[in-house]
Length: 203
Image 1 (cartoon, one colour):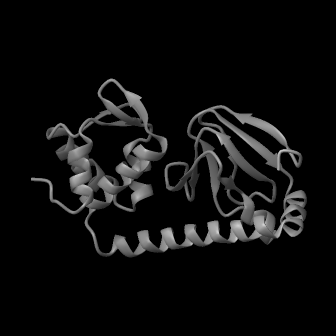
Image 2: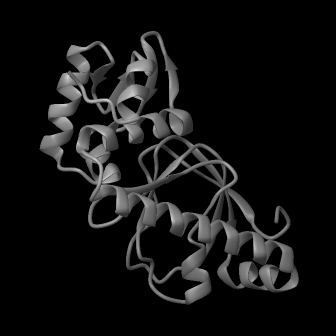
């Protein structure tokens, strides 16, 4: 794929493409992380990182973009025009199968989260979300692991209200499990967070 496109870079906070656009290029993330949003820049539905593609469905379906993508950090990506991407898939069936498996995994994950939203409570969902985010985009902090999202973004990602996130974060903070700062949440006690993610209620 390195021969198909060119490397492009995006500063943190910039938009890679927006919902409703008629563009069809595909981006393969090489360094950094991006957030995929709908409705607003704070309604996050997914986070993607190195080795993952974004924008491939617009190239395949030839339809307007269904979501917007923003750089969470400085991002380096391989830019591949949509028609070149499709030709590459047709010429490499193994890549096509790999993409289908990848999209299937994304669909299963989305279905799982949707099902969980009706089964498990806000505390557990939020804890699971933070554990997953820490593993994917967390950066070392003198107090623990830093996740560079605000509470509104976190609410959209895990599917709970902003008010519920605020209440749970407040309790976790009182327990010493997390700390908060501007546009970030620091996980200070991973054991407590993991316990809540497994379904143990915050006391």
